[in-house]
Length: 183
Image (cartoon, rainbow, N blue to C red):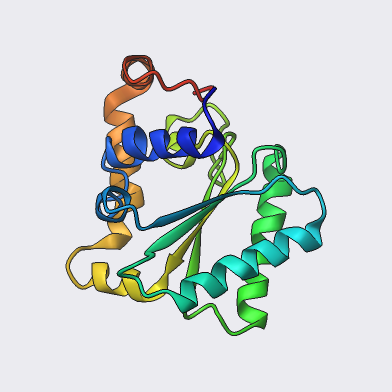
């Protein structure tokens, strides 16, 4: 049986790296510098404790050892609006603890929908994942990448890739790569 972590790793390999949605994801992925944690608790205070523990671990370990982290919520936040509310709580937590300059969050969800888009819009697939995920990034790492590439154009380029691929191409890619994430 496939574990949640294996499924997320497969998604990163085939979608995030495979379609080059994130040009700087391959290095930490292949060097095994990513923390993956599965959170099964249903108590919001436990969510925040785990989130803070991951931040502390990233602070204690240099980027050469641990570059980034994913918290996977297979049983929680199935409702996308509920997930966005939780994401807002985490961003507020970063601000209240003066950690927003040290860390940034990226959001991924099986029902991801960009504001103003329709649920079936193909561009939503750039941020769709097998489970609700919080990706914790080091701000310093993002700044390093920004010095060598235009990171602000990445989301637009990703959306353009999917538009060019089209719905049939996207479905064929998912089928070919055995991606079964309800795309």
